[in-house]
Length: 153
Image (cartoon, rainbow, N blue to C red):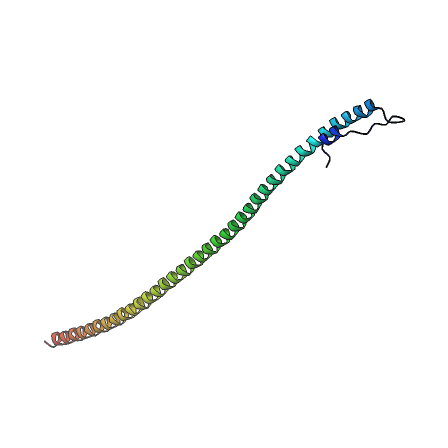
């Protein structure tokens, strides 16, 4: 690439006849040098900016990658937490069902015991009633006998 210094230092051979005007060529070269210098500086500044932007882009890509990885980890963790919570909920439900079934079994057992006790009490009552009936009948017979004896006197 030609530098502004190359343009400034460029000299042409001078011809005697039908040559270019030395002043015009020098003037044009000065203008060209000035414009080229400005463009050369602009290109260098733009190269620096492009490098800076590329570095920033690399940084942002790294951040993006980190954020994507973080998001994936967060999703994975959320799934794991959800699964653990579901397992715990299922375990709680199973424990509750088991406890409820135990209580039902205990209550059924108590009901059977109470029914047996009721039947025993009914049998005892029937026996007591039969004894009382027998006692009353014997007492009635005794009274009848006493009344017969009283009438015989």
